[in-house]
Image (cartoon, rainbow, N blue to C red):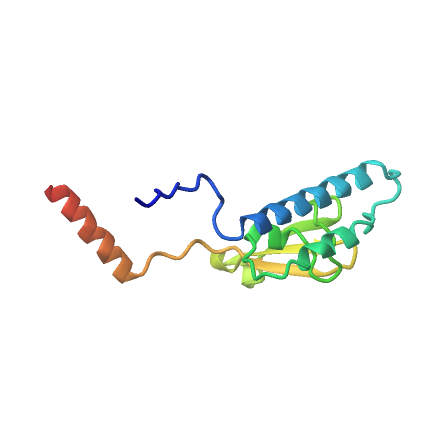
Length: 147
């Protein structure tokens, strides 16, 4: 008889080793950035970009891996600095409509103080599900209620 296959436990899915490496490098960069900021003199307001070499290694991963939005937004795309709010970047919500009349026009602007680059992210509500998806969910709910 054939041997029964064991189910793998919490393997983490596809490319789990890459995700673990990325998480480690991100944590190391944030730790080094916080140590560099805490050891600085109070008169120096700009953050040191000494961890640029370590953060660049996150790009060396040869596989295609979709990064979480939080990870993508935590690095400056121009100078590769780890962005820490109120330390080396500023967060601001802008609404450039006339008199801020359009609430759906809010934009989060993240400005890197190292290279003065601005990243803009729309702050809109999540889109509702498509009609076909809503109908499927409604049909499934009706089937469950009928049982």
